[in-house]
Length: 302
Image (cartoon, rainbow, N blue to C red):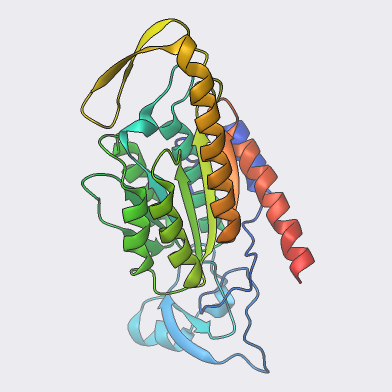
């Protein structure tokens, strides 16, 4: 049993415990997860051994290997599948924005920690890629309690700063993730959308299932500011712009609406699920709603 995610309270965690991250498309793989495989036929074909882990069934132990090596290994078969997942979190300085309540980064970590625990409880490996400058190393998809602890530690130590590098990060991992799986992107998507679209399109062309959790603050959606105000950049070294917020509000909201419409259009064009999340919402509640809808889609698909 994995420990509780450090960025999600027990009440929200309880909402997720009964759910399952279901593959919208048929999964393919070798590890013993919960997802149906496209491979059909009679008896399962033995593929290889792997170390016994928490959650593995005792009947899968290869007792001959145990007797010979005094170590516990389980058999893997070619007709079994897992959902290989990679979480990509925008760690640019803008994700640190908050006026009241949690920041966008807090919301992103809640999503990541909840999904990670849920996937690992299903024995589906999870990897983590942080989109930051400089770019941290990719943490490849693995399973197990120690990997879970390493992922949570990476999230705890990361402070959003500097210019975002989301499109660059997605482009980089598209050449690193060799096996088709689930790629969940968590970002405010306040960036040039064309490079982002190209990176998502490339991942989709490689057969990955795509999800964008679009994390925004309510103030960014409503622009409640009035009169003269100075806006300070969280990504460009503290550069600031004095502005008459009252006269600029209409222009801002118009441009924001166009940006959001284009983002949704891009997601639809590359078959990327679009999940909006405001920082004043419960991340667990939004995830639960999305995962139930995703499961319903799978039942319809089959």
